[in-house]
Structure formats: C-alpha cells, structure tokens
Image (cartoon, rainbow, N blue to C red):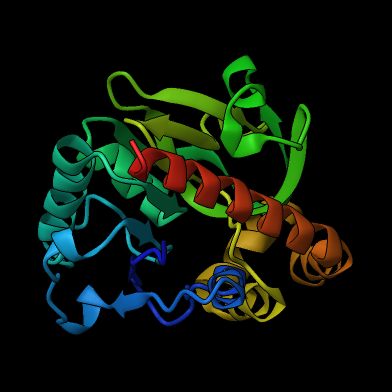
Length: 244
C-alpha cells in the first residue's frame, strides 16, 4: 500500500530534511503545505499520515500566527476522530501536546546540542524504539517544552534537561522534541540566525556556536542511522495502525 502523507511545514529553516530522503527511498511523495504562507489545509480523508515539522514560533502565539488555531483543530480531528498516525517534530511535538490538552511553556533550560534520549520503561518496550536499547543520541534544539502531556498520553523518553523528549497519544500519534530530520545544513542555518547564535552562547558560552557545530558534525553519521531506524519503526507502526 502506497501511503499518502501530508506534511505541515512552518518555516523555511525547518523542512523535512532527512525524512524527505527516507520517504523518497520508499517511493513516497508527500504533499507539503505551508500555512504560514497562507496555504489552506486540505481535506484530511485523502491522507494516511500527518507530519508536523518544527518552527521558530511558539504554540501560544495565536494572535501573531492565526493559522495556529485551525492547525490545532486539524490535529485534534486527526487524533481524536480519525486516530491515524501522526509524527510531530519539535514545534510539531509541542503543537500535538497543546492541541490535545497538554501544556507547553518556556523551558527552565533549553537545549541546543547532541543529547542522549533516555527511554522510559514504556519507551524501551514501544515498537517506535525497537532496536535502540535504553537510549539513543539525537539533535535537540528548543527553548520551550512540553511540561504536561495530554490526558492518557505516555512519555517514552527524556533527557537530563527535558522531561518529555517524546510521547505517544492515541494509537500512533507521536511527538518528539528532538530533530530526527535535521541534517548538517539545517543546524548550521539555525546557528547562523541571531536568535540561534544567542541560544548557543547562553547554553554553552562564548564559543558555543563552533563547539556545538563540531559536535553535531562529528555525530552526523550516527544520527543519520538513528534517523533511518526511527523512520522505519514509525512507518511500521503506521502501517500496523492503518491495517486495523
């Protein structure tokens, strides 16, 4: 079955990245919409999987980004009514939590580094993380975080600075605070923005930008392998859910 994928992209610096390559290798051509450019949400019954990407805005900035209101309605309908597979990344993870009744707020300490995702018992035993053992490394880059997951959602992993690095709601609605899609050019682009550079300096000192860029570059081969394994696990979870 050729899966039909809808991707919601929130800004130019947060595209599908490595996930686009994974889709392409499987012969999947997702439809990408950009609500921040005024594009309208299509009819959801044409799609099997929904992907929510990252972005520089906050989930509570509905006055500045009016499209956040209908997007949250889309998420609620997708999960509560359709119960189809969803992957939310960074901002998408936060939007998923917020839309379903969780809470998102400024983090006590944000993240912008290669982090170690420690899995909970539920995460270790969840098919999403099959083959990873008790932890995996990933790129985390955020200043806000999910402080309360939605009712009935299950936390699958955390880092030393983020209590909810990933969670699952419904049958297969997955939120990951970290970036399974990030490639080298994306993190370099984030670091090149004034806010991104300031974020790195605040977290890692005056040499934070070159320090983190080197760590991410060195970790890239491992991170791409982790990205592919995560993708394969998610797609298998999606197929199993859709075949019910």
